[in-house]
Image (cartoon, rainbow, N blue to C red):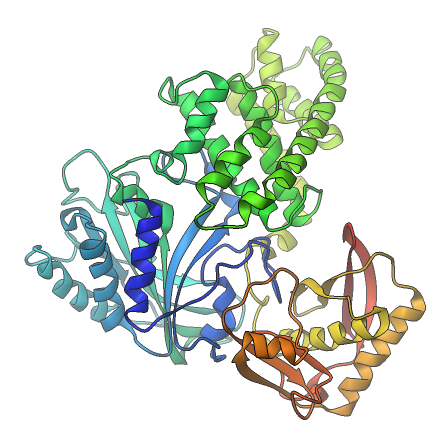
Length: 605
């Protein structure tokens, strides 16, 4: 069964059960986001899980491309990837456990033909805020016999773990709840019966997780939400691995054509050695990630998403050289990715030429960096007489000053016959890098959280203020100005928009005055749900590059949609009246790319 067939079955299965398919949105988060990349299918749905009504209703289904950049160093084994797809279904205060668990197990066993003898379920064992999930245990004890597993016992077929609790973060207002995971045994010993999936984690593969999102984080701990939700996420590529009878995710149709192209370019076989296999896995993973990031409009740079793309591409250059591919590695692989995923992203082939051009240019830049560094590297090694710790000091210095990869310096030293203690070398490099990062760690961690930084009163205020800011910028700079992203914390708001020049002091003051006047007027803030085409006719605007379903939610500021000061596609949440907002001051602006400006603002103290 192909991956396309798997997805078609999944979408149709849930559509038959009253679900509406929602779009697969850009990897670059739109709206109010503290996230570097969309990292799960639920990310775009955070406001609705918190209680905002969704324009498509209470039952939703989709597939969502996602990236977890923090997993980059784990890639190289048989299952880890940075870029992946999540299939998901959601109940927003509608059905709950007794529907979700039988349905998802039915899909895996009946629709996809998975072997129930190799499948195991996990549940939440309980803590001070929520009891052991006896309801899910009872449901699983009914599900397994349905497919021929009689008397499924805890500790044999069903496992209860304290870790079966999902939450997005620790901020006040974050959502969470107990979850129930589906594991498949992919080891070499029969069905895996008698083994604990947590203890033998390398032999089991988690393919799906039903989160029963029924709690909200408060100052007093976790408390019940009025609305009980289901948030299911399934690893699409992992599911394909099981259905296609593989034990290596890179042998599925989501990766294998890329591996074959790498074999062609290198003249080496994937199965030649474990090291070659590891390198080819990294290249296959990174080219998928890079292509999808570029597809969504990101270009290589030294900031945010652009930095991630640059790192992916430069890592590809380094690893490609290990297997004899010395030039144009990324550009040579883009057509394969575009061809493989045209069924999912029909516009990808039309973007292929531009993506290749970007990648070739970046590889040439990196080649110049390496050439420039070569003389300095050679000189430092010619005069080297120290130990592995000293070499690590040199590696860090060269990385800081020239971007020269430490791994390459280690290889250079080894080629010259310099004896290196790998363990000591990497310890000292890592320690220095750790200290270097400490100053910015808090901000970096925030970029991987997602959604509003929290759901505190001040964050919701700033979120509403961005609507007035968007309107004011269009009044001052022109109607061509459109939001390109935002980032909101309890301390400030950040807003990106298209504009070619730095704002003058006069323009900044005009924008501030317009926003603060509307705050003082005390205008109502409300929303309507309507067909997208009708919403566009009203003049409602939306974030650049965002995709929306057939029906959309439009928030407006004013006494009616027709007479609104501001009207935008948005999920929420917002205050009810602008009188609840604080006057703001724009305190910083900067360029974040060609034709895109970024401004920072905070409340006037």
